[in-house]
Image (cartoon, rainbow, N blue to C red; front, side):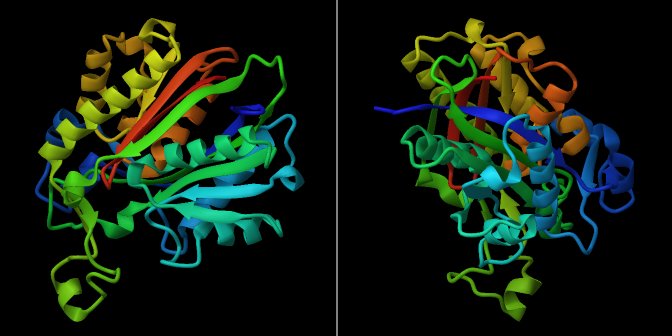
Length: 331
């Protein structure tokens, strides 16, 4: 039994300044704007500057989340969880680097490696710490710089990714407060984990001249198989969570799924039998930013006046592992 309720107190986001659109990619690889738009729904994506690392993007997003909060100050943050697969270094955790950048001390800080589901995993962990009474205020960040891992020889994947960061402050909700995280669920099906991976650089395939020549330090994905897994997995975990909480798609004000591909987003909405007017889409301007895509989309939707206080929102993601999960909350 939970002792308390948790809630999203605020959101923030940051994307690098450099915009790379489909016409720019036409000059670099054998592709076209029409080909990319038709298959992915993407037009622009952000590329980090050479001096920018994941912790830099995370810092700016975290600052915005803190600034956006009316009740939580920097000194109130008691834990930092960062979802990322493209951190500053294999170790230490990017969350620890972010902790120092924020000027915080003596609080837990750690990373979650769950691919594109990283933010959902981090939120699930954070809410359980808060609801148990162990902590009151936790900073959760999803951040990626995947453009450093692009295989430019693979035209099917090199067009897909962009950089960005999204952050949220989770805190304990007051007893009778309307805003709260209703429920969340995270899981994984590792039976085909090899469908989406960054092969080299770990203990299985340490960095070597051979792995560099083989482009093994770049993103590998079997897109068609991932598509099928993504739709099926996000739908199943979301449907289960809605049923468990006596909710229906009709009760939702907004659906925010991982922004991997417009076809996946549309297929998931169709499976839900949800009107497209309920679905938040930002893929045209950010492309696939992995663990940061959901908090980026939510932050934009709040700023644009779409997501309002009292709205019920479903967040769902699917990523490498194969991981997937869902969060349902009232903002």
